[in-house]
Length: 277
View (cartoon, rainbow, N blue to C red):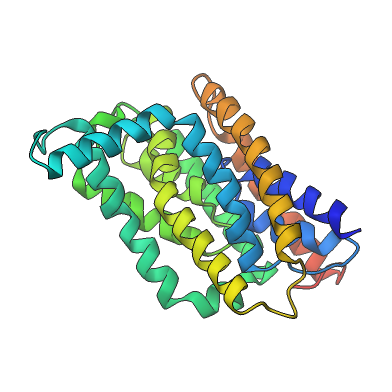
């Protein structure tokens, strides 16, 4: 039965990682409805996100390799530091610092307290409303090449909010981008690129911990987690391609309503004692 469960969780991770609806919240909620009725855990969530970030690497391969190449050439003095790709490389590095620092400082809370479904439901609704406001009132005129150091850092702090399940890594960063006046495509593009260092660092950190000190109470073993990660990779790639096309002609309102309805449904289910917080 565990194999069916991890395939379902891999599908959920792949389907929700790049949509502004919080993949960690969905893994947490879906886990309650599987036969084992258990939280998959922060380690399982972080490791399966490696699969979806590999999808980002593949989808944005040309952009990422160009940015890395130009950044390295700038360090060697062969390219000016004003080069747009070099600048983007530094912005991604600087924007990744907040989530790295806060992730280490609040690791214990991320693994325990922050996974309460009461908090998840609240974050789904609150940040759904904030996304709606940013999508409605944001000017949406700035392309990604206009990204400033200030905006890159603000993006970083928005990404760090995703340490709380229910906020959404892509949702938080896209919301910040829209609020700062960037187009939907620019906001999403930088959100995906910014997530690469943070997700890989978190995923491999948790993977190393799991290998060095296996948790006997973990819901799923390493092989099962690997299967979920592979499933998440393939589904995640398809979702990135779909989302980038979707937002070129549509707003984020459908995701806003989904977040609010899901959060409200969780309140009802928790209130009736159908699921455990």
